[in-house]
Length: 170
Image (cartoon, rainbow, N blue to C red; front, side):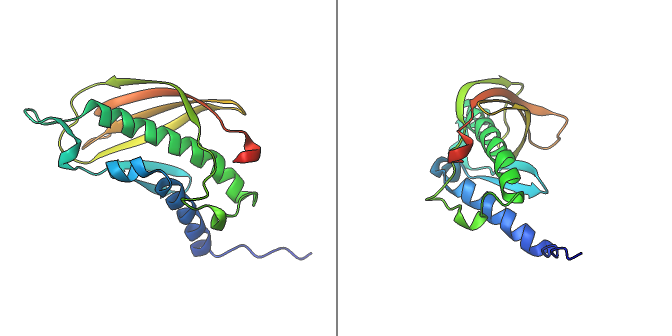
C-alpha cells in the first residue's frame, strides 16, 4: 500500500502563516491600529501594540474605548474567519497561495457586539483571545477576552454574533 508522504512541518507552517498574514493584511484598519496575530497551531492570540494614537484620555492615560472595542471585534472576526479557513486549508479545499490581500474570502458580518469594560486599558501592549462558542452555516457566536500584563486580570471582554458568509464564496 502506497501512502502519500506527509509534507515537512516547515512547509505546513509556512502555508498556514502565509494564509493568516494575507487575511490580516487584507483589512487596512487592522494595520492602522497596529494589530498583529500570533499563531500556535490553530490558536490565535491578537496583539495590540501600544501607540500614543490609541490613548483616549491623556489625563489617566487610558486606551480609547473605541480602540478597545475595535480590537476585540477584530480578534473575534479573524478568529472566526481563521476557524473556517483552517478547515478548508487543511482539507485542501483552499490553496493558501490564492489568498492575498486583494483576493480575500468574505469575512463574517457583525450582527451585534457587546463589550464589557472591566477596567481602564493601560498605556501598554494588549492581548486578546477569541473563542468560537457556536458556528453554523449562517450564524456564529464568539466570546473574546483582553488583558495586558496578567491574563487573569482582563481589562475588557466581549460577546458577538456574526452572520457567516456562504461557504461557496469563502
